[in-house]
Image (tube, rainbow, N blue to C red; front, side, top):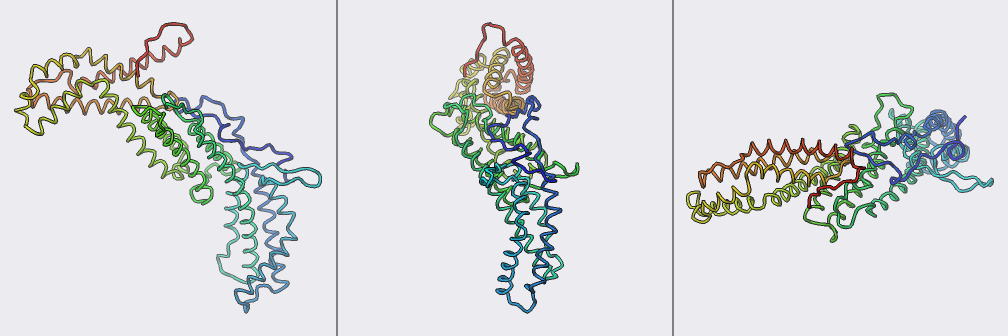
Length: 451
């Protein structure tokens, strides 16, 4: 006996906004089992396996009885005969359509008893995948032609008709979610500490639910090839494209801080999207390959810009000094640089700005500022800090060479020393942050880092 969705089954459809946000730092922090239940796929499988052969036999009988597929007929006549057979078999298979509409969660109008089926977009998506697979069993691969070929063509037409309905219902749901995404929910006007956007944080949860529903009732090694199903692939990617359109819009709007907030916004969310998809396996990585490539480019460009801003801001005097020396050196050569920037001025600036203690303080401030800018759920802090340490090493390495070649002066601390200080700063700051979170409920004075 088939259960009829709308009477005995609860809807599995939730708006994207209802899904729980995912955290890369704490992936299992939120219990979402209450909304991650699979849809009732058993009925879909049973209906397709039991009813489609009956439909095929009915179509074959009708074609054979009336000679609708005689080989001497031309193409136009065959098409008219197919339509006649379709009309006849449609009448005899109306109950199949009635039950399949209900089983696939296709919304209906009220019947004579005042009852109707409420549309279920998740069930429709899963039904579309099952229908797509069912189509494969009704292709005339041996090119037999005749009544057999006509009956298979009718079954394919029946499946396509159902797929159009379930696809339309799911696509309408996707379009509604895109409208919500484009409202940029939860993003502050100035963009500061926006964190992971509500829409981007919830997409992985929705995709988890899709995979749970697609794999329900299947063998353990089954993997849905979503990338090969055109409608499903197109609209899942369209949803992802809407996320990046929202991200770009928020980063570029006039009220967003362009010094650092726009770059932080881009780097955090693009990194989160990439990692959130990759963590969910090859099927989604393949599906979103194009979006992952684009997100990686966005992340690298914005990270480079952000790290450059951070270093220039905290090491302003040194950056200005060595930028000036580098520019002069190109024009006059190493030997004449001290004429334009006297050695006494050079040494005085370094003594004031680059002692080991000052370096520890400055790098500690940089880490604290980065920790403040980046959200915990985004999981980007360790990655961004590692990248910043690499940039510090490159910059201080160049400054070391300039100092030696132009002034015969050894820069202290060296680039290697700066790296050691930076690694130490991240370790001590992380420990301090953990202690702070444990005691955050206690009222006490905090030493805040300026932006």
